[in-house]
Length: 195
Image 1 (spheres, rainbow, N blue to C red):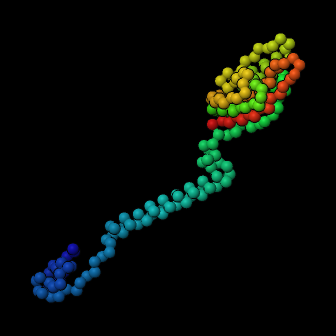
Image 2: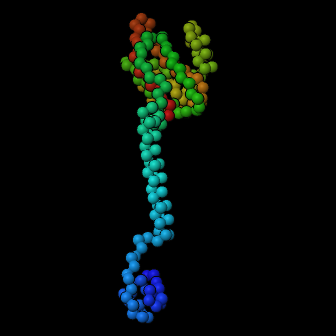
Image 3: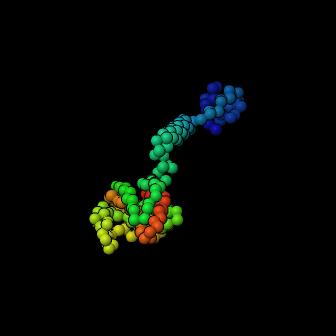
């Protein structure tokens, strides 16, 4: 407790004392202060800190909400980005090429399924794709290079992923010739996504 001066004799008296120990004069009880000036500074800092935390949470919530409405929220950042998504039919001897561009090296996943008949799947960079197209129609077969990590021959189902460099890429699906007289088609469902 704090010590004060007696109003009668000016002697030192405890705030809690009812009378002065020197002269016996009754003391008026003083109110206990609620907070000292040091406590006021700490309380003020705590309030400012609370306002800052609440402000950051409100702004963060609003930002996530706005980005989510524009397709750029956290879920969009974690979800794979679809590069190709198609379904088509190929007759024997036909092929179809689908192209996409990567701005940086990325992991790419290919999911392909066919109904009833197998296909060949080749992933080409632009140079390899040009070589493949130049060799189309060669009477006794042709030789061409392709990206083996995401390619497969004679398949009805393909689920592969690999990291490939930036640039233009061409995914070619080919229904090979298998019969001389009766030609069978294949329905192909293809999805390519980057992670």
